[in-house]
Image 1 (cartoon, one colour):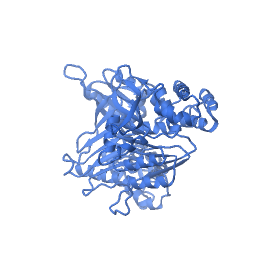
Image 2 (cartoon, rainbow, N blue to C red):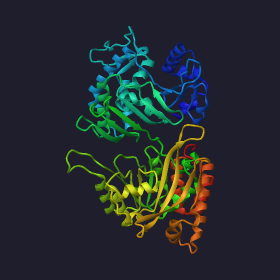
Image 3 (cartoon, rainbow, N blue to C red):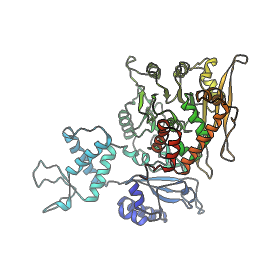
Length: 572
């Protein structure tokens, strides 16, 4: 994909149109209808927000492009409505008939195809089969019968005669429908989209990282087609949906989370679904610093706490970036220890050598069902260094606190916007953690979706609170704020200097510091190292993980020296 992005320069729409017939056709039709020609932007970035009038095309994954357009009002001013057009190869009616013939042949021959273990292997096999059962019209000798079954070599020859352009369009559509995401491929290929909302037969709406809410040109035209698609998708992810079980949650192959509401009597406007997209590459802690989600000092605080076995909850509202932050902080855990994760849908990404990944299993048979509670009990028996829970929602929260009591640090996400609301939810139904046990949790990170400087949306860690202990006189929990985000200056402030209960009373002793306040020097030293990584643009997750691995294997001096000489995997 990178080569494709670099092949075309910004503004060079003519080259893009020459290379991709579907872009050429789209631009000409658009220009004829609206009287304006879009510009070619290349890979999209946040600078596109300032373009006016908004009418641009950007690349996602070859051969997919996106056209972003803000229509003009009758007075010639831009409206507030932004249109998102997914541009991919399209088949003519004749080519659609060829596709059906080709699919039928491929399915007949599937039993003799080689075995595969990954989607990439499957895609290569399928592409080879497409080549085997097609023939370019330029290779024919004698009369050409384009678009027909080629029978001149005998009735058993099933090859289809196509042009070179037809072959590439057919290959793309066949692979898209059999392996990838079908009609939603253009949506799921765009990393600038965050949430995808589809309700019945309406046009699909999306939350865009740069342009906010946008409306797509994609919709399902028949309820039966939508129902079949959702059934097929749900079966593929191992959580089949039906009228008897109309609501399911699951994860797509790229890690994105999907919620399907299937039955018409539950979703009155027709079957609906929401997809929360996750970036293909795990976001690193230094990338979060570069984006302003957290500060280098805040990251250093989390690093010290996780290295020395503190339990933490990453808390916030839906779509506030909790799971992204959780994955970003995991490299701070000693790379030589055992980690267990327990999830309903697999979203946690761990690169440690000893990682046991546990996922719940649904079943109509109660004996076959595996719930979060079962996973946590299994994890406790294995005595891991850390237990990671994708999301605490119910009674498993009490088990998580039991794990903390037995000396197993826990990292999890949770829905609560403040420490007060977190305590209320944990101590109330259905979790019911006794309030006197709440001090087994060491600290909590709170995150929100906020308005980004210059417009759009952004994520910010708005605070970190330490849990000091249970106060029997007030029958409450003592907490103390360590970090605070200033929304006006968009800056994080450390309020815990010489006041941190965790750093001074729990961690300093483990570090062997005679003067417990020297722990703040360690905090600042780590903050400076993280900032150096950010300044050197070392934001790739694998780089960050490997660099911190040097710290755990060879010590601070080797780690610090490696920062200044490290070559990013993206540039190697």
